[in-house]
Length: 184
Ligand code: IMP
Ligand code: MG
Image 1: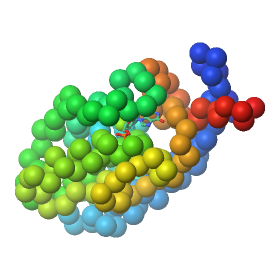
Image 2 (image 1 turned 180 degrees about the vertical axis):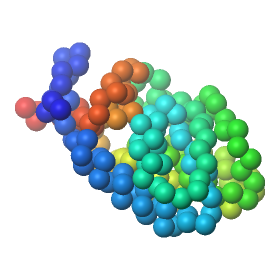
Image 3 (image 1 turned 30 degrees about the horizontal axis):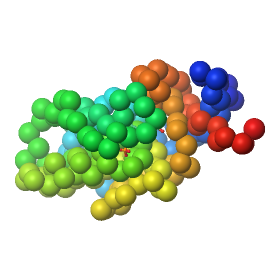
């Protein structure tokens, strides 16, 4: 595992190693298993970024459950949110009276998760919870706290473990953060 990587003249330093991510993901899976023991929840992964985290999370959560995916977009290929959320693929499950767990790679501005909570608010759902591997606490404007957070991280652009820069680097097995200017 490299300590830092160079991309287009920028330096990204390791923030969370594979082992640190794995340990925390197991804790989250166990916690969700305790809380949703007899509720047969539906995990709803928010594509694309959450697919790596979701696959490890659900395998650490040893209870009956279902899985589905939705796809939204707010970033395009930029490093900051466009301020507008688009629904690109909706879920297929019957969600009436079910417990939903939205799975995110990262909550940054909070725009995406607020949009999704609002969407599910309008339907007859038993409960909606959110699990996010990463949380940029300093940025997020939220009506309601995130129920399960893996790591609070500083306001730096991150890649790896599902997170992309221009659709690349999702397959890095650790998480790397863009070095702050003047840090060198
Ligand atoms: P939000 O709507 O600003 O909370 O951001 C939501 C989505 O933007 C996340 O689910 C990610 O897919 C993407 N995103 C936010 N911050 C980063 C980052 O630092 N690196 C890569 N993708 C990010
Ligand atoms: Mg995402």
